[in-house]
Image (cartoon, rainbow, N blue to C red; front, side, top):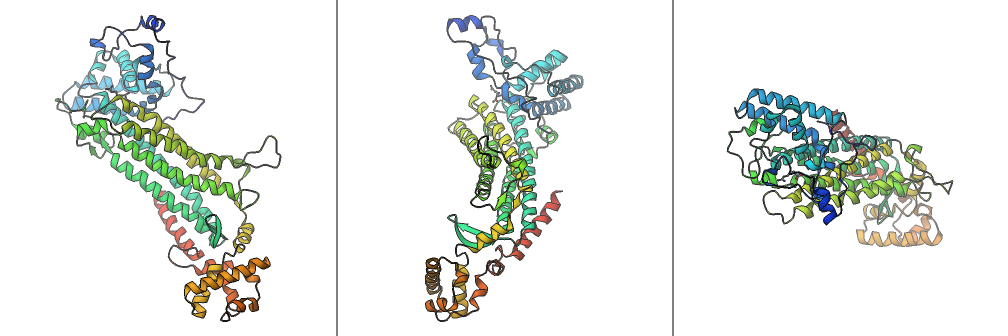
Length: 495
Ligand code: ARG
């Protein structure tokens, strides 16, 4: 089921009520309020306006309307199959719920904060449409198992969407890696030039990260795929319900095994947020590299016009705003995770209203992650890579010093520590002359270690350096091509 995500243009007007001032004026404003028709049997008066404002979740949980109606239809059909309600009542309920859904999808539904949440808004409208049978829908059910079911369905969809988003980005990174499997660039540690690597190798590093992100969303989905429906308020129900049937109808693998757990945990949402935060962290790192690489000082890459912005005062500017925003989005996503962990900690079993605070966090984090993934995919797909700049940068900064030390070990039989020391002296000599290692003469080299021969110049070139790193997972173009082909085979399986 797809989530009808409201865009700024289509979003229904905010149903959040403006609270009246507390005190006598507020009390007067509440005078006309009547008790809630869903649970107001023992209430003489309606809620204070501010009570309604803090209590209502309809302003945001309307995003679960499709899931709510799907769950209710499955529940009604099961009630009829079990002889708990009549077939004709179930048919009226099922049909009425579809009408409600189409009203919501058409933007014609009048959401009411007085009815608190999506569950009661839907049921109240159903009652207007079909009358008495609507009152039988909530048999053997509570809003507690209802909301847990709806929210699992919603988060489950988001896990699928996140997997899709990761796959798309992996596709554009693999294409970059394939094009530049043998483009040499500086590899960094501490953001200082370390050893030459290949562009393809660097791209494939992010592919591995996103592959694990995808795995986390898939794992979370598999674990959350149990149906809370039928757990009722907390203790289960005395009605002869069939939880397997509703689980099956909603695409769950099985019903949850403990009703108290089912209505009171939100670990599935926490797992989603944790996976989202890790994924957003990966995106943030790549975004930061794009910001650095596109600067005038680096010029490793150029973002296309579609992914750059200008400055209103400095005509020369091409700003990587999308990359900067992706770099920042982790703040919201991790913030959502921290918020929900904080809501959940210390809550006694079973349901507490605190848990209504789960949804906005997850909604915002999911929207943010999908947007960041899509933006990164777009940016990576039409990124121009300045191959010459990469290679020139790779050749500076003594990036092949390790190759020189390795050569001394291999060809001159030095212990690595001695080779490291001799190479350090050669780097110092080159630095003093303002040149790079390959610019030192053989005499200058031999002054540091007489065992050095002209063959050493072979390993000082960056192309030879990367080609030599053939260990599994290493930066050699052949290794990168092997990684690319492994992922391309995986990608064929996704199509
Ligand atoms: N709007 C509520 C939520 O999101 C639904 C569950 C309400 N349950 C209750 N017993 N008040 O958590």
